[in-house]
Length: 112
Length: 114
Image 1 (tube, rainbow over the protein chains, first blue to last red):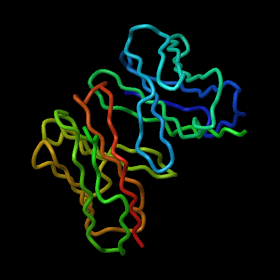
Image 2: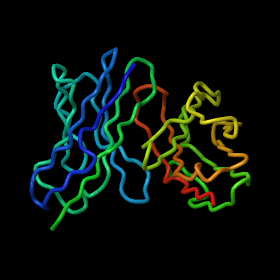
Image 3: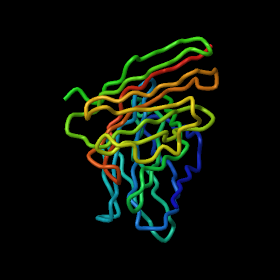
Image 4: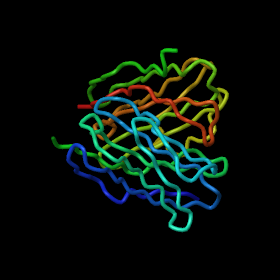
């Protein structure tokens, strides 16, 4: 069995400040973990992916995430938010041969 | 490649009518997924196909929903009869496999059942 919990439904930041979107997972097997982003009226786009290589994963648009097995976490970060980062972000887990399980999403709001 | 193509982008229909959503996956991908997104329930996997064969349809809400994949380049999701609670955004996605591979999503179909 696998599940993912995104700890915040909404996160608000000011442009130029750091972004932290939190995600915890549970899995019976070594997981693969993903972050997807969804801009308004668009489909989901892969930001980054972890599959048991380096624990710090770098993605597109300056985002990165760190896999911490001891904490069962895979938080998404970015040093400096941009207005174009405003979107909904989904943490996703997959383990064994199972399909992807999506979190409920975190809406990131960026103010000028 | 044009990516995953879904049609229509928007569908407005009346309760009781049949609705057919269409999807063309990325050429070469052998797995296709149908998801439903609502505010209340987030993203839910409805069904997925591997090599045109339905593998897991446990997410299909009820018998009113059916999905087909007659060939590697086309899939449909049908709702008959439609109900207002079916209103949602329906996404199709494809990938090289059904496991931990990157999913490529279409732009979705916004369905409104009045």
